Amino acid sequence: MGRRTAAVGLAVVAAAIGAAAALLVGSLTGLGDRTTTVVESAGPPTTSVTTTLPARRTGAGFDPETLYAARAPGVVTIYANLGADGQAQGSGFVVDDKGVILTNAHVITNVAESRTNVQGARAVYVEFADGERVTATVVGWDLFSDVGVIRVSPKDHALDLVPLGNSATVVVGEPVAAIGSPFGKQTSLSVGVVSATGRSIDSLTAGGFAVSNAIQIDAPINRGNSGGPLFDGEGRVIGINAQIQSTTGNAEGVGFAIPIDLARRALDQLLRTGRVRYAYIGVSTQDVTPGIARRFSLGAERGALVTQVEEGSPAAAAGVRGGTRTEAFNGKDVTLGGDLIVAIGGSKIESADDVSRLVTTDLAPGQTVTFTVVRGTKRVKLDVTLADRPG
Image 1: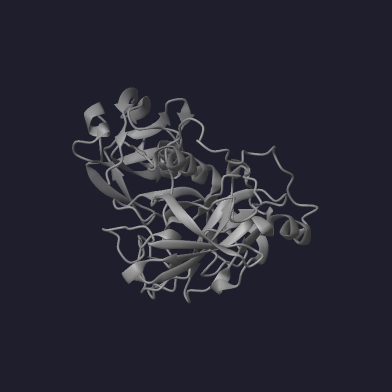
Image 2: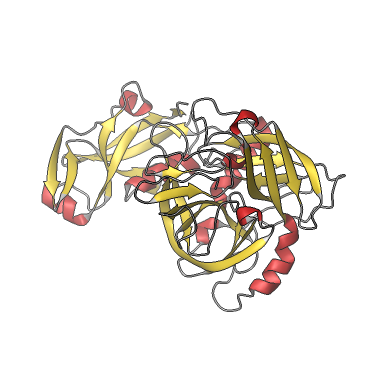
């Protein structure tokens, strides 16, 4: 988060210390050192990125002291010179023996100051747990998943690698530990539990896109924690600490981490091509619950109801239909008349978040996938050829 807060209602503050004023992102997301999120996957990265470890235990045996001793040497403090946009400070962690370091995009770019002309830092420095500082180069960043990648030379400092885990298996209540540099206080430890999974948080990209499957935690994270690792009980990274929800700009027990599965996809693409691509279908959707389905005879108890189809989008070309009217149900507006998405390919769709998550993490531009929709009393299959997300 940077030193910026959004003083309107509840502000989501990015966890890096920066030098500018508040930036509102979607639902009041105030940034400090920059943020983003997600990407399309592809073959193996060009460097030996630490791979997923076996399924972990949860609960009993959580030992923060031992975890900290083992993992703190692989966590670094990042200082970025943003030129006219000031300075930023965040955190990061070493993921391979060639010096690759994962962090947040908002730590190493000026996105908090300029949404329309995002530039990388003019200079980046990495400070290790022993106090030694070295120069780093920016590999790239992804503003959707708020993932940034930098690299240091292994000749400049010995490297302690941090193993990546599996965010898909995270469960509410499991213990977690965050290591980072809040307010510049190097390699600080905070602990807590996962307080929710599957959260949607605003990304920094235009178009109202959201990051799905964010991990909500009650472990305190503050400005300067941005880009630092969120560990499971066995010391594997399950997320990158990125945002807090706060009325003060400081930790109030509601923090959010970018899921490591999403971050890994961005990392792979940035290492391979220097940019991240996302699939795009061009629809807006809303959740359907059994109560809504019964009230309006929608033909399926759950799914994603298409409220709008963008003109010229892949969905429009495939014949997906958007809503035509809005009615109220139990104090909530429901847009009716559009298709109800119940499956994409072989995956069942039960909510609007399911659509966002699947398109963002599992599908790629240029791919043709079959959407199963309920239209009136019939189930219709539509082949949608995905495009690159605009912007």
